[in-house]
Image 1 (cartoon, rainbow, N blue to C red):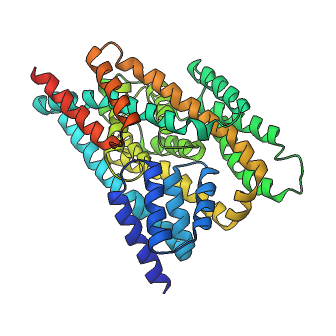
Image 2 (image 1 turned 30 degrees about the vertical axis):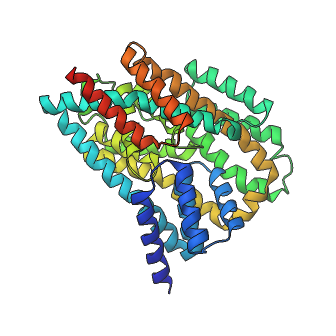
Image 3 (image 1 turned 120 degrees about the vertical axis):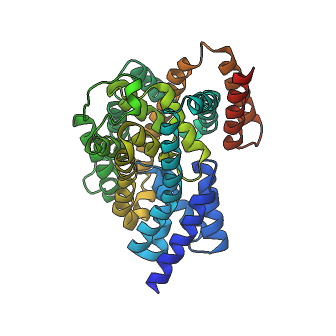
Length: 396
């Protein structure tokens, strides 16, 4: 019976991993339809609790929700079956696209065509993040205090402060403000706050693995050792709250600014690939890993970015009810959500610099933003239109 349950879980989430386009919100809606309405694995109230629990821990929310649902349905075997099945289709697709992307740079003809397509998609990626900012602003910044924290965090990031340090300080301030640690007998706060805070503080205090800075051309070669890639992505996966779009800020800070093994354009290409494939946007890490470390780097990046999500869910799944009902910890997480909005805003401002000199790219950005904000057209179609526009531009 247990075996049948985890096989069912693997089949359901494998199908969702192949068909769930549209980002975390669309993934959550698909899981609600599949697991609550159709299969009745959990009640609507229990599903809402799991969504809340996924928001209280670092990592990709929709992936963590899948892992939680697998645990509810089939225990520990279901936990792993759901997570792996949901992640694997996207990872394999992105891996193949990364290999094709690398080979295209070795062919003059395909290099021109690929560059034209991606140049058309890059401003659309910025527009997708703008759309996410607009739709998430109310849920991420609910109070004046959170708004002030978001503004201060944005100023700190733009001033060169590490994203990890900003998150760590914001969490400390939020926890102290909420009084989550003032009463030693408050088991809710101890169970929910300390593991996450420990991850943040430990990551911020430990040194980032440093590799020799390379030129943009060298970014297509094996520039980092797999172990360094694994550590870098595990650190990011351990402290990243919010949607996959926040990942942009951390990837840029680590691989563009500190390591120097990627360019802004290559990072936008990676995010574009994560957008046009189904499943979690965090699969963009596989693309980045391939660019900076080849196949071994892709594997290391994939394990590093997703492993903390499995660990976090495994640690918190038995205590979901207590975590979700802790008003103090929920208040403290408001501060972290505000910082997530600030990080996404910094990405828009910094990435936009790569397209501002180009009036055609600016036009694509503006048109894409209007379409995404005021129509129901999915981001995948807009990205495809951007790719077509990029190719057509080279034919004029």
